[in-house]
Image (cartoon, rainbow, N blue to C red):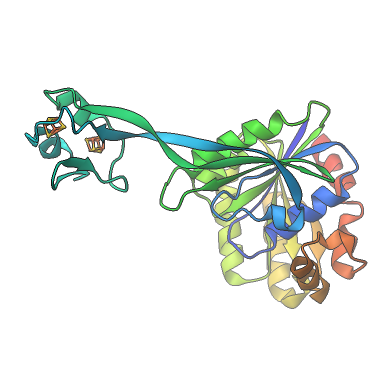
Length: 287
Ligand code: SF4
Ligand code: SF4
């Protein structure tokens, strides 16, 4: 199975547009994973029928049994995160608890237990172009990497006939990105001609170089600032990174997004680079 992740060093570069267009133009059997778990939106462009949902349980959190707790305060004295507070009884502040388990260890009454914390949800959907797994992280949960890993695992089990895993990754270079790109065959980075995008692209490549994978580049809206696009091309050449598509600025992209469609569903200039893009990707993968 070829495992491809579409990522970008920054939000707003057109990553999900590229993911949806690649998914729509893939002639092979595929499974899709939306790993942008803090702002999942691949499903807006590739709508599907929800087939299952399950809670995502991540890190542990302390839980105090008020029937056993004597209110001695030993646990609060030991918690360096100030996550235990006493009002009418001792209770845990979920946003502060790091799940270290020290309070459970020191409580003389054994009134504290560590329990799994619900941190989001994992969904599976059936779309016209393949099964999709996607996740939604609860705000402030801070475990995006773990959820991304679970979404990828679910996606791989969705269709035994699939020969492509296509991932719409998160923006940025945090732990969700690391989790997204680990184990993939290729990363397709979507960038655009702006000074900040070039900076983010360099950081992204630095992170991805730590993994054994192919790195390819798509320049979105390349004709808006041809000078900056030229700088991206030069940088890519220096780094040995192939530029596999140059997508022109096209108002039809906005129209497609507004209508909830991959851009490849519309006869427009921005869709043309996708017509043979899988061939280009396969050629790069076979090098
Ligand atoms: S150490 Fe145990 S008994 Fe004492 S306040 Fe904490 S939970 Fe309650
Ligand atoms: S598990 Fe650790 S962080 Fe959470 S309340 Fe207990 S001591 Fe504090």
